[in-house]
Image (cartoon, rainbow, N blue to C red):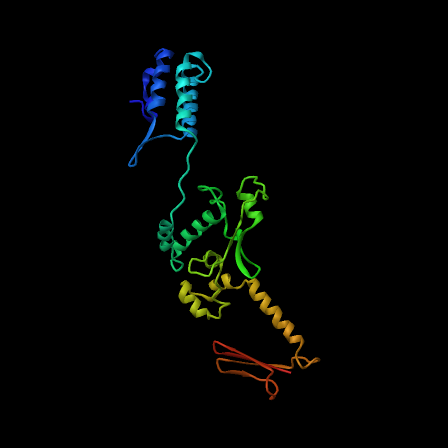
Length: 289
């Protein structure tokens, strides 16, 4: 048999006359095919070139001969070149059909973490035109930025992240690194938003006891390590609250007293009505002017 890699297991190839090796290679080139459930078919030209280069290195190391240039291999090289012409150019896969696309999209589920991750993998490949596993391994969540253009939400593949993952590619080569939102359930931007959005339970108003019930922590200090950092969204809210305080009716005032009530403790200031009161988890803080 002259299929596939069996030529490497022929011990006689190491000692037989080179003219016989040339004859074996002629037969090998003609019979080299892919055999699978779809039947038999010839390898693509690029794959055949790789096989020949591998055999060339093998014979060079074992026999000290040149498969490509030595005249003794002239006939097998003619057969090889003829096979390349008969096979033709490399072929690609046909475009996915609409029915298959419906089946694929029907699998995705934004409420299922694993299926959501699979959907993001597909969206990046499909919309950004990555080939195979090109650059996928090095992509990070921070490389996908949700923004808006002309009132339409979109997702950009940021330049810095892409430059690190797409080897020395010219950023102006015309490749599109943006996907836009749609008005249906298959909206790609919605999937990216769910994946890249972080939910801080403390900032969402949940008590420490509720957070511990979810995370399994026993002590408040343990949860505090994760909740003590304030998010950018929260910083904006704090800044706006401080700005709003500048436009209060009282222009020159000082905080004269703070009333704090917790667990039966009552430390009160003046008897006037407070200008503001904060109450949460059994604690009450009032501000007086």
